[in-house]
Length: 124
Image (cartoon, rainbow, N blue to C red):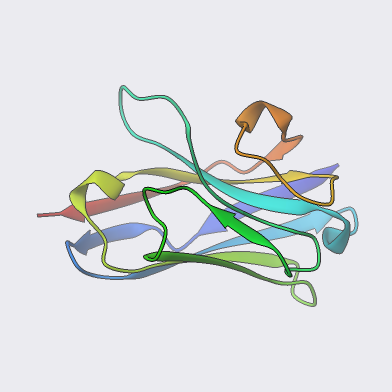
């Protein structure tokens, strides 16, 4: 089992920045590809970014490319999502996920473990 706990969400004005963290415990963190997804009210869960177990490969959704950066610190068992130039459309609950693979996918159904999520609200 892998336990995931997100933090860092909050209220920010458009154009601002936030850094989300996801702390993992349980199994060997460095064996898992990690990802961030988000879900806005009334909308389906949306892929944001994924990172390989070593951190050497990252993939992003087109909607956030160039504004968000995913990273990880395997010594701290933590994955991050640095969000910049935030827009009201970025408002959502952001969740991290883990899968025992060399690289994650954009399909949320392929992930084995999920955190509870953290709310990000961007005001205009």
